[in-house]
Amino acid sequence: MPVPHDLYKDLSCTKEEIQHKRTKDPLLDSLINKYSLADAEVVKAEQAKSSDDAVTRLKAKRLEVKDKIVRQLQSSS
Image (cartoon, rainbow, N blue to C red; front, side, top):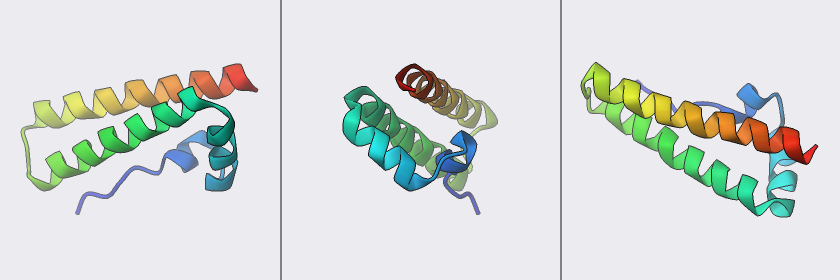
């Protein structure tokens, strides 16, 4: 069964640390919201047994957003 991706584990941060940073950075908040939506799309596609190409495209979109989150976290540090 497909499960949501653990963004906090990937970022090596706790949910609380990210929540604190989100309150001070509207762009970061927006990116994390986009990531959550992209992750939900991946899970939905996997559950629906969508084509491998469709799932791969959605995963690439999710990764692109995650990379933007990482850059934003680095720039705000």
